[in-house]
Length: 392
View 1 (cartoon, rainbow, N blue to C red):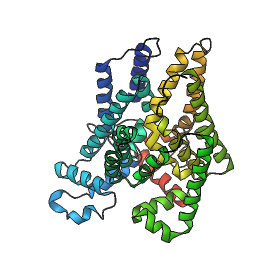
View 2 (tube, rainbow, N blue to C red):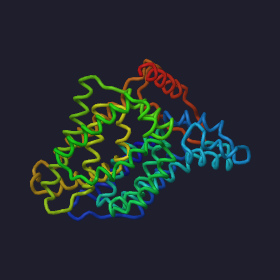
View 3 (tube, rainbow, N blue to C red):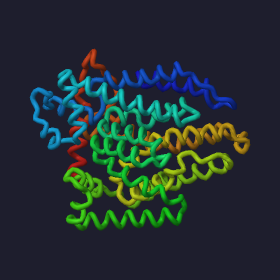
View 4 (cartoon, helix red, strand yellow):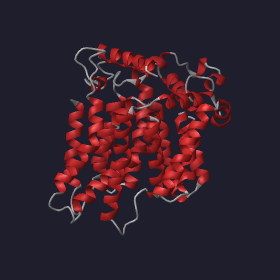
């Protein structure tokens, strides 16, 4: 298993360079892991769920020699994605060119972001690999590009250089319409993080969602395009039962706030990491509890969560308060955080194809060199999409 080899390598690097009184860093190993991440995802062959749909879509993409410029605006996807796909199709008819460009940009940006903001870079990479690597590189290919542009815009966000921020965010929006949420982040960051402001802002957002959902004319005016309106309606349709809402509240709100409070007590005098995004996160999290379809907006904050969680775990390890139980406490916290991902990966898919789980969308691994296909992967993806469509 190529994934297991990478996981073991990252664990070795974490133990060698971090979780120490004086953490160290190896730039050579860091760059090697980046190249490894790009090659594994970039040279895959029909690995992942959405990848299969993008593979079929790419067959119908036209090259620059055969397309009218107007088609880029009215295409199936956002303008800049259409430009990227058209450019790659002009270079080669092979889909792997597009996926290699996509994973190259996404991973180079994420590695840059982690190197810039994380003291514990290998721990952050380990968390990225476990929680989002397959998702970012084989599923939400268009959105992960938009997320990467948000990472590039974040230094401008910190400096409150709004022209630069909105310019980059506009590019993100032209890759994926979900980036419309990024236009609200500066407005939310004006408020200080507190339960009072969280409650007021969340109620305002939920009221806005309710008004838009029940007044199409207003939504047409505010959401600009049919694509955003369609996505808004789609996300609004998703709902959890009572147990699902309780679990989401415990995981996204209670657990996250608990980590925040523990970390603040350990590092009282230090400036809080990503404090200008605290309120943004919890408002989106509260919206996710109310409308589960909004959980994809959390994707824009997950790279920050890798860095913060790595910071938290290493702070626990170095803290004198937890010296007797630090290893056990770190393990327990990690297990709690990993449970939802474990349940996602191991979800039974045998109703679609015998003796399969969701992780079979990614395993066994296949490369562009062998081009080995697995029938169950296509069956699982097609039937699960059909099932989700029926349940909307």
